Length: 211
Image (cartoon, rainbow, N blue to C red; front, side, top):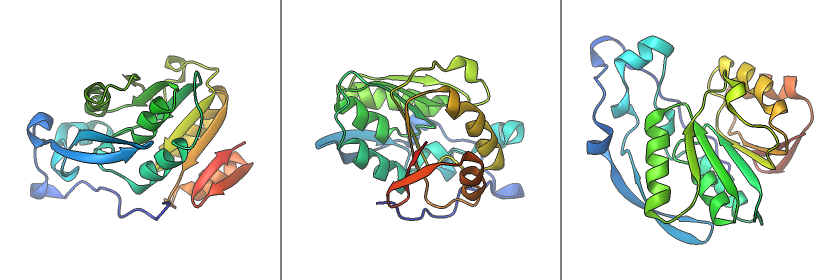
């Protein structure tokens, strides 16, 4: 749990960059233990193969969501120890959504969000194929008006890749309400985020409660 992640994805230079492969054709099946239940999940074998030249040119979009990051696993393991019956739970930057799946299995009323349409579609499909009830929707952090307030628990795992992530989350998180849990493996921009946020408790190794 909580180990420092590997190097972030980077767009390859010049002619090495590839057009995006079909997500459907690229999926593989994996078995994962989430909240004491073995789930069969579909996921991309390689995030690098999903790099889209047009999306990168538009917003420097890279498919971070397609990796099974250790921080997401660690956050899911912690969430699996919680009793969440009836709690309103929001995950930001959900990607493959292990924390959201864990929260739903523990009884939470879960909304999993990501700005990547493929991530949201795959998370919804994986939840359905494992008979887990949750909602998965496309949401952007720079459109805070599209996210409700009054959440009981807000989850985020390894979301501070870029400076714009820091700025957007500092503006967004205070309005969401409830307990905020952030799994952060030591990305370069995390130091600025924590300095500007203020009160933080490290409740497990590299798992933080924001106050």
